[in-house]
Image (cartoon, rainbow, N blue to C red; front, side, top):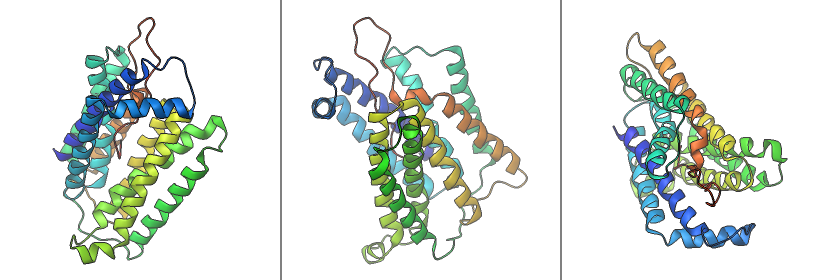
Length: 293
């Protein structure tokens, strides 16, 4: 329930923030460039919908942490990817975005995949993994940050996918790091590399995500995020952290995971919370999905 709650929060936040950005951009004309983007962002931040979206992002992150401490990473990752289905449904309601029959079918596919995962998922693994795993996560977070710093220099064709995958990996570092934190006492936290991996990975993921959405295809970047934040963390959970399925239902978990992620990829265009097709309205507001999306 916490994982699904996080998906609802992240998916709804995307639409609310897109509505605020669209309203902020309404008076900006056709101006482009960093100065125009900054002005739109500053105006959007003052909008109540944007602030409500940030609040939902924060609540979703709390739900995500609770879920990661209770159920396998593969189940949480697939549930977070389903936030795109939430975005699609909410966008159809609030933004008058038109969903095709194929997209409605993709929403149903995501729900079916999550249902299969819910039936097959076992309890959270109790293993802590190799002693070097927290340091490996910290190293991965640094690598994601370096990729973000160099991302603007990548060729346009592969930029969005590369940065999207990097952002997804950063959110994946957050998912794994939450599981690796053993004690929440201040002394233990300050000496735990998993905490720094969590903070650095999350910050780097947002950096890459922002760059990808500003300088490339939002649909491609969102697809990369879905892949990066689901497959890698799921493998880490199964191989090193003891995540398992219910007895005899491993096949159903694999099928449910694949179905849910495939459905989310089919809805990747809703990572940008598209605009309704109306004459004279601004173009799509390129908003990011919620964190670990």
